[in-house]
Amino acid sequence: MEHLGVPDVPDVAPAALVRLPDGTIKQVSPLTGTVVWTVPGRAHRPFAAPAGERNLLGRARDRYCAFCPDRPLDVPPEKARLVLGADGAPTVLRDVPAEQLKGTVAELRRIPNLFEILAPGYWRANHGYQVPAELVARATAYTATPQGRDHVLAILRRRLPADGLTEQEWAATPEETRLERGVDLFAGTHDVVVARRHFVDGAVYDDELAGSGTLTPDEHHRYVAFTAQAAAELYAAQPYARYVAVFQNWLRPAGASFDHLHKQLVAIDEHGPRGEQILARERSRPGVFNLVVDHAVANRLVVAENERAVAVAGVGHRYPSLEVYSTSDRHLPWEHTDDEVRAVSDLLHALHAATGTAVPTNEEWQHRPPDVDVPMPWHIVLKWRVSTLAGFEGGTKINVNTLDPFTLRDRVVAALVPLRDAGAVEPMRVGDECTGRRGRLRYVR
Image (cartoon, rainbow, N blue to C red):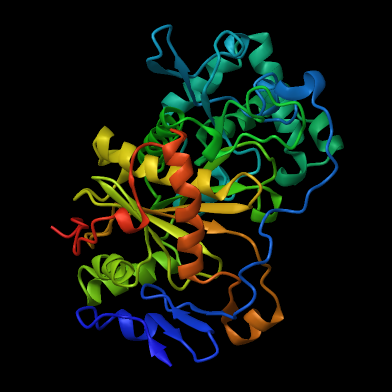
């Protein structure tokens, strides 16, 4: 068998990639220990989601789902929206009253998740959280108008099953008490960042979806920067949060409720097992992320790079995965300069464009938890959800992956070159054009 590694990264290379005589590739994640096998002959399977019935859109394009712009009252009251001025400059509007929601065109909206993973009641019961006076005042101001009050009451009624209430109990509840419950809609820390389009401009059919890769590079940069700022605000809003998970589910096989582009942010009161694993790995071997990227360089797994970020085909993931690393010395996304955020955004946007909108994906952000001093670079993993975990994986903890990192890298590089040449993605070095520099991550001070 062939061990695919280099002598100067001994902790990562020997076990990370092994090619057997028949071509089977065995991987072990250098960060989490996840075991993955890729068997020859499976990499040429189609990865796009099965095509469904194709329907004409007609006039439904802006009312297709609850996230569409013509249905602003189908979701809880907005926290913020990003709009563009006549000169194209972005402005963030906050706490827009219900009566004014259609007064501007929101390129991005930040709204509470209707069915939160951790609702305000969780934080109250387990941590003694109390809703700050300014949030109570915001809820009071919003519901002081007839449309705002009707909006909040309608959303609360949709939440009855999640809140454990029956229609009869709701009918017997005084409106004043209902509105007191409505304060929680303004105090939650599970948010959704929703992009404007459900379909690409000029779409005729309902399968012409607008995904991350169909945005322009400028639009995608605003999307990433707006999300990073939302994460910072969730940490500030929930004093008991130890981590804010940021992720994007694209298409229903990847866990999306709507095929409308959106990211989610969830404040939680622990780092999570994966976070703890990575922190422990970094403690035991400082600079381990540089070893990971260096290993990608040594094995020709670098997909693309620019001056402030690098993208590689990941090793040891349950699904074929691409990783984007910021090369900044800053750890938290919202502390990066705008140029550093743009660099990460441009590579991530390019990977989405190369993947295409027909492939179900998860986009997972990783950053150093603010309450620890162990360094960690901001990085994002883009997973292609092209297989289904089953009994074999559950029983053996060996994940059978349909696409090895080498084939994944070659597929994406081949797709990126024409996209770059056509100007659909920003200029960047692709594949063998990349510099091959070692130790380029500067997160370890």
